[in-house]
Length: 377
Image (cartoon, rainbow, N blue to C red; front, side, top):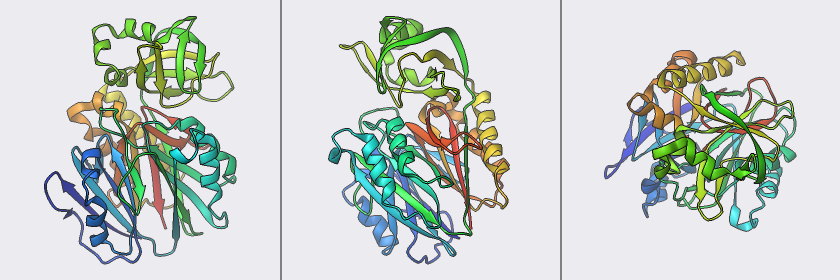
């Protein structure tokens, strides 16, 4: 596996942080601030650097490269697989009339299953229901094939997210990267570091990922009561206080971030589903707990491996970044301390993370977690 990395700050050219080695038909991952990706020549600039590259873009709420976390930039990681292959597929939400499940099902079905080890998803994060997208992906995915990835971000603006494959970044895209090869070892895991507090409430009215009522009362009104003065900063302030959702089906509870609010409907739209009858409780965290959560995520991912990591793809939640503030890089450093400095590290801060719980087969949508996908040939 040959890896080249670079960064582009606002108003500057691409600056390579590794030797600019010639690569053959590389997979090129570009994670960047939405304003950077909206530049008219965004795709052409990267194409000039890698004329035969397969270029995947994704907008972010923060860019990860090596041990650093950046803002208002774009980071690039180009990978030439020496004993493995990959295929990239994409679909757009506008072609499916809001049927995220069908999109996921048809997207996964495009991959031949022989020697397919893993599928990594880079999805738009503004209007997709991550839970139903994963449901569709899992319907077509064969057992033994890994699935992970993330929902693109837009800083804490929540205006629109962009991603694309071999074209200028645009809205509504879902990108899937299929990784093939018997020599590939790919493991993934996630962990949060958040704690529940306050009363346990029951979801009495919801539809998909839209939450209307808790204990028979308007969900948004109740949530605002807890936030107090911070309610005026919604939806950004909600990133500090996500919801713990337990659907009582024997599975582990999932953390859900609030993406948008509807004052007229008195409702909240979450990154994933919150079924009626599920229990909901507020969550909070500290800088130290989040950093420790990142370390635990790395330990879980490494414990599943037989070889050292060559490439680490990190997807962490924008809410974690807001809590960590000037210490955001602490959680990346915790990860590197566990996986080893030999690994090339990249990734982004997201509106949702995709990975199975460690040791489990089915992928889930998470919020407020550090999610790792570790690769080696």
